[in-house]
Image 1 (cartoon, rainbow, N blue to C red):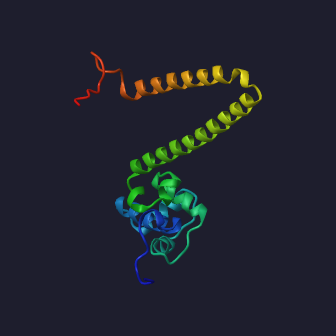
Image 2: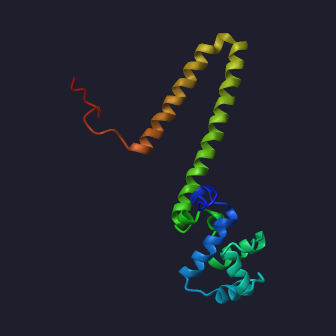
Image 3: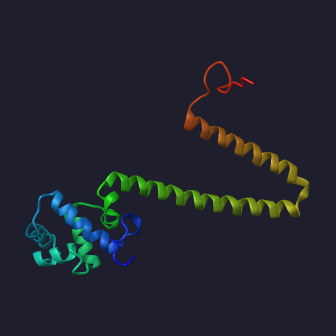
Length: 169
């Protein structure tokens, strides 16, 4: 097992990702290690061609400032540069993955806020049982209205002439 190649994709280390990406990006542009070194130096990140080669081949570690420099020289977002090479080389895929993760995190925050708000209302209604029924109806109606608005945005208006589902039983 120890002689196997390291796993590719998300499990590959960030530093390993950067080394692979530097080589991929350099070669995609047709640059030599000298040309990349020159560009790094012009951007204010001191780097000699030997250091570029050693980084690309895992013989030298890369520091954060250098990583930022490579991202700048290649015109890449830093997260894209450290991502899995198979996906990161496809910048749009990385952008879409980031959007999914951002939306997921927002959903998690919204679920937590919903739970906290519902718990607070339940605690209040436990102390004020005389308004529980009216409050529950109000919440249910408001949530149904919001769900309908969301469905309309997602799927458009229902088809003309009635229900979209026909029970043939």
